[in-house]
Image (spheres, rainbow, N blue to C red):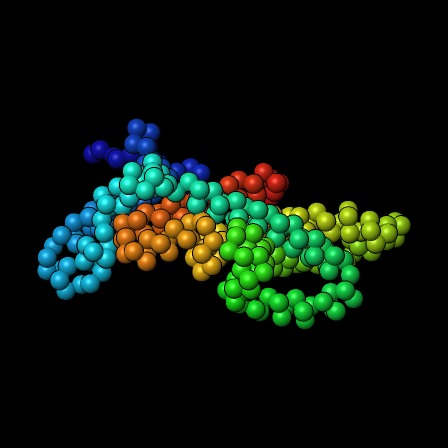
Length: 287
């Protein structure tokens, strides 16, 4: 009678399916393949479904006139980046204006918000006095401020920057304020017992917390900044990607409209990635 060898017991979570020679596919590769397959499937559906007459006749958004196609969008992208031979115009001047307004407005808004959050978190009296006004200002719909800024500063990139500052300021402020208030009272009391002045408490204890919380808000702030910059350009006619989007919509240039949306999506992704990289560099101890 033969006796089968006993099954090997798992060691450190390893099972029989993890034997050498049969390495499992890493999840990162599997995930990337699935995502690539979904993208390819979506592009194929976008390209060929509108060509089915039955679907195009009964489902309006599948009409090629409204939905365009990946090949036409690609052609429009090439014209935007290389310049239209008929008009000589390209996307670069518009893109530059939008990027500068987004980056400058976000940077200024975060700095001002961090300073305000630091000052108010360091003085409860000042915080109590100013809190109702800050909450009231934050409750005003930002889109209602766009016409006012355009009247004051004109349809210029400065109006876009001001609107971005107005939105990003509150993102930075509330993060900075909560960061400054998160300091434990015992730490402040110990510092006072050692002779620290209010200025030293703010500079040496609250400021590091405020900077940490403010930089943590950078990815969200840059996303909001891009949205506000494009919205201002779209509504006020400021020269930028928003104006380009409005022109393509006005003249019913579906392929160009989709191409501009693709550019804005990639731009938003790049700015978000840059913000994440800055956050990791500054807050490397948080990793």
